[in-house]
Length: 356
Picture 1 (tube, helix red, strand yellow):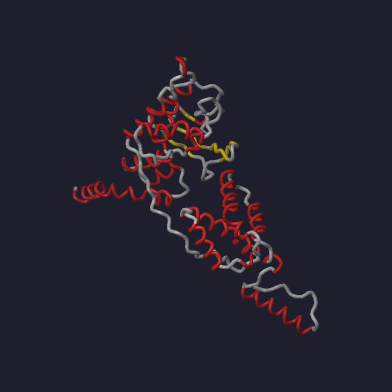
Picture 2 (cartoon, rainbow, N blue to C red):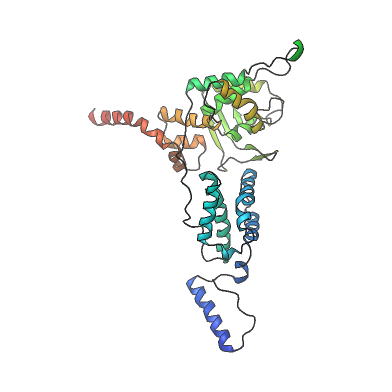
């Protein structure tokens, strides 16, 4: 790295020598802006965050947490040019020693790497020292789709929670039946919609005549505040539905108020569906009552939808479009291990093709 030169030189020859060094660094691509290279990681982190114009609120919150928890305590006061590959590797080992997951470690390193890239682009660094840093290997994806019977059991339990007896002989108050949440579970297992997409689904996005859901926005909660944002890939999509769900949705929507801009699924007390509250109050207790593993997540219903599509022989491209993946690579990378189960049928069809 080129250090800042003096403002004046004692001789013309010294000035020319310094300038020649700068020109040589520029030709080699190793020149760095002296003042910028001495700015701290905290300054560059603030600059990097300010440059992210299209981040969703939950993504901004994730980056802020990683900065606050891992990056700035270690690197905040360090000049950007003093961040070395060796020190980064030691930092990774320190995070691992705290028991942090492989995903957490990778996210922390990735956040630091993005900050350093900002400095490289601005000419404050020649190269990003985060490149080829060794991080823990992610565990193999543990995708456990639910069976049809398990989905039915879960839907029944979330729809019909046990009634809690009131004290001193009084009648229990409040709601004891939640048919809309049974519908929510069945819809998730058949459509593969993400939780935020279901929470953000509005009445005017349900085309009952054509049996299609139009996914155009999501509803997410960040630090107690609700945000309506585009889908994960920033692209809307149309998701066809089986007839039985169309009829269920028709009956459910007929009972709703609020017009076309109202939400299809709402909190039990009314208002938008705050997902974490729904998850803790309704979903996880229903999982236990249905006898499902306590590791069962709502996201497993999305995996259930993908597995069902694979089981009936859907083309990976069709699965990609229904699930709203950004590319076919994401679909195959996530669910490719389920495709070999179709090999036997494929072999049979190929045999028939060439021998009949």
